[in-house]
Image 1: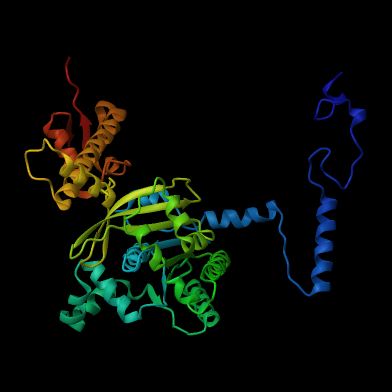
Image 2: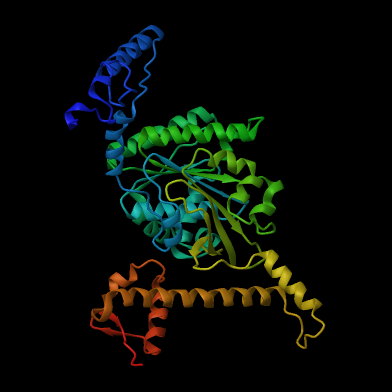
Length: 438
């Protein structure tokens, strides 16, 4: 029996079924079925006065390729780990949930500035704060100073000079009492941005709870509005960041008083966060460990949902109150429960000679230990990269791009320590390992 005598399944050719409009026997596409579907859909739309499309998988491919050619959303350059976890594409939403006064607006401002710097127009819907208040926060964030100082002490010329850098890329949406009218205004602003800039806009809704203030069922309303914004992002090929505030009863879940085994546990406790995150590709929960009068606060940014990368987890941050600046760390700061447990352990230690440490001392000791471990990991990553390139070494700017070697001063410090230890050396613009004789 030759190849011509059998079909693609290895059965005799005479057993091959006759051509049919049903493609399943041979799993081959049927032009007849496509024609029948198109005719039936056209007839149904005409009869019901609808415009349903009901595309097939192949019909979606051109849109997929077109969106793939558009740039992804930018995260601040210093947030390497968040950018790696939360890659976001056009037509997607990002949920940012946090406690009252937990820096959600500042977090979004830093993301907006990063996107404006890469050419994406910013559409900001100030549903809670006035545009003037957002202006003050933008200037304070850019300069790392308290907002009150900008409001009370800075002259008009200095404030205007700071905002000039983003003025042509940033626009506020007018505020309306009616939620549907507000949504329409946001959509109109997005379409205007596409008409002028011709690139995907970055949209911030600050915050989503203002649209459901009059609703009886907040959770259902949040889910409904989040899905409306998801469809808007898809329809307009934009990035939309939805800010969401946790309820007062669940403040403990986002201020570090409750520990979580996994990032997803935070969303399970805060139901409103779960309702918003269901419509978003990426979800972040800001947990800020608040201490009275402290100028800097430790924080964990939980990523309970990362649809495109599958890298759910948590990253360590430092939240600086002057300016509301978020600084990514390469280790997880101590949580309040860890600090409390170690402090209680000191007090119960009967053989301890020194006085028990205060909570501040315990926190500093835990963080110093974790920072030392992180520094060792940075040096290990640099050595690993140098080892891969052998005696020829690697260009310094390429070494800086290696994930895990740190950024800025942290990278410079790690490389300098390796040089002092005699493990690495610079030759011009390159860095190489120093081979040790056994």
